[in-house]
Length: 402
Image (tube, rainbow, N blue to C red; front, side, top):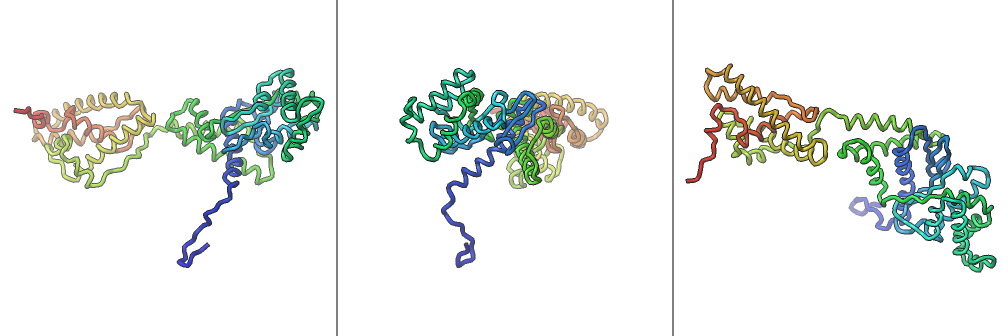
């Protein structure tokens, strides 16, 4: 609504169910991505087709119900979501919609949850164990046989689902329970996607980017199927083609990208007293070029820190780079002396400086930004490991205290 001043305001009260509903819908996309990332070749994965999510192969089917649990426990002994899901699966098996012996019935909850009955169902991997789990559930909700004294106490919202499970063919229900599984996430489905990616041979710094991209790819593909009225089925082979192509694009990138910001002139001027700038004074470099050199130095320092922290570059590679740069400088210094030995010292220094600033050295076989190698050379010049003026060491040698 608009106020008298023309400003648009929004009601303070929100619909409390909306966040949970949105998370529930979004979770299906995220769960599908998790399944695709872990699927073997030849698997057909789907959403809102056989179930919330599902996997189908020559060996059988996995039907999956995904539950986003912000606060309530969706698998508690009397949770509607638990009994509605079991009822649907029992009905499906009864009507011949699936073979319970070749089907895994999975309830996926986005955070760790448990319950007496669901735990009993989930660990029942034999028919005998499943039979005992069913008896436990019946006695817990209905009371002991044959009276079932608690049956009328079952809440109205779950009574039809409980009745459907307990009155169906016991042998068939036991077969469903035998293949029932409870799977819990960490509480952060997106982090769970990243956890899967971290087990793959990709750079850790690329994990979030890849997770975001593949989440978008899966959602878009599912939406396209649904909008066209087609089953939203993504084959694992097709998905891994998309996934591999993107990983190769971003993780096999042969260029190291800089996120460092070039300092302002005012910021650069604060570094003019540094030793590497004094080296530039010795060869008469113009003021503007000295400011540019300071910028290269600071940006390269920021890049080294960022690349090492992100894992883009192993820190030992910078030590190897320094060795290569010092060797290159030494060779160029000798060549410069031969070519310009008759020139004034400052002119010799300018020639050596210009030659070194054109050096292009890769880091871990990756190209670097234009400022990086010059900045690294200035870093070496700052501690007098290298220099430009033929007598730089004597000119800038720290004076001993009297």
